[in-house]
Image (cartoon, rainbow, N blue to C red):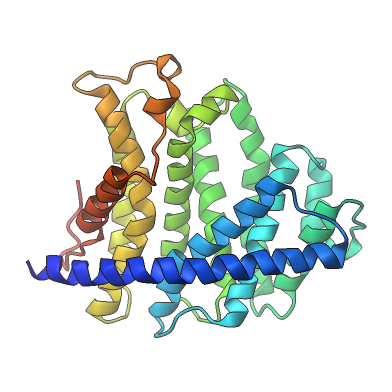
Length: 337
């Protein structure tokens, strides 16, 4: 009952902050992108514009604030600006690969030798401006580029996921490195010095965000023949065990953080608010599988069976229940199942 009371207080406060912070962050991001368009005399395509605004506003309210609150404050103005620029970079970076806007060697050049690269398109100019802004004044540039290199290599390797011959282990390695390092990069944009366990939390959260995205994108990936673990796994319960392994690693790291129990409890619930989406996706697959030993052919199912509309009250309630269950910490680091 005590946890229920504390959880209720935290989740209500979390929800109110989410609405308020997201609204302000969206307004800030829209104004920021418009100003960049004017400066560079061009336009973001609509999908990229919306992706940057949505990603920044959600990530800022749920993830960045969760990590800075461990250090006694919310995200400051400089960190917010870096967050917008990160999502400009990451969104255009995805476009470079997914839409083949640049050859791989050109993407490598604009990423690792930005001052030598001569941009020709608006996307290239926007990427360069945001990338150089992030690098300017960064304290840990050497370590940052190590993580960025891993992310670049994972993005390059992800092109193999359109080859049906790729193994599940290769897909898992690419998925974890791509998602884990993409999120780990964000720790360099905050003016706090994280512990080793905090850095592990950043990486683990990234693996679960990538897995969650793949679970929510099953229908789309099937249409594009993109080989993801969510598409490949024939047993939803095996997929659940893979996901819970990451959840447990995250929870164990949170237990060892050198902060008060109150701080860790709030942080754990914030992390669960993010990775609970993946648990919802797996739960939907488990419902489709039922008592059978494997899932039905995903290609035989209608789109409605493979998507989750998070605007529906029933799904919001399911999300709250998952956050409640998995956000709880045990001082004995008991594994969840």
